[in-house]
Length: 232
Image (cartoon, rainbow, N blue to C red; front, side, top):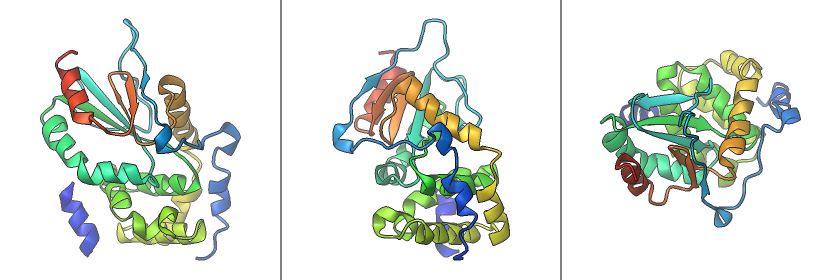
């Protein structure tokens, strides 16, 4: 994904519409307060003998070999600094050695933790599908520009910065606002969180699920993949 990273580098205060985002799925518990990283616990979910190891969701972004015997599902949040660390420093190896070689099928899912994640995800989904992962990479790579964890005031400062980034990726302000206010995908986005909690007890991001086995964080991710590939 390095080509468009380079392109990105070179390359209103009227927040009434954000009321739509604040209301986004709150009635259904779409946002999840996640545990501190120090409280991470490994969760093992065994796939049933008759059930698939991967059940697709409408919002999934996938790559690799769909017929592979190993399926890796990543749950990430745009505002998650650990997710950024993984995407910047470890994803290139994952892509080169496991995805591009056809060894695994990779599934990327956004787990919404709050309204900032929702705004970022809606803007990402407004881009052409081929640019979705590149934009997510830019969100992680340039978190200090927009993420409240880096001192950017939320919501106004965060959302203004996200709008600026969307503009740098070719979205007009009017179109970006329409994307943010659009409610068409809300049920599908809500289902990602509900499905992750129900099936894998997701309580932090990033969480990686390998053939039904969920583990928070990415310690030992490649050895875990190698074991799964070896049938262990």
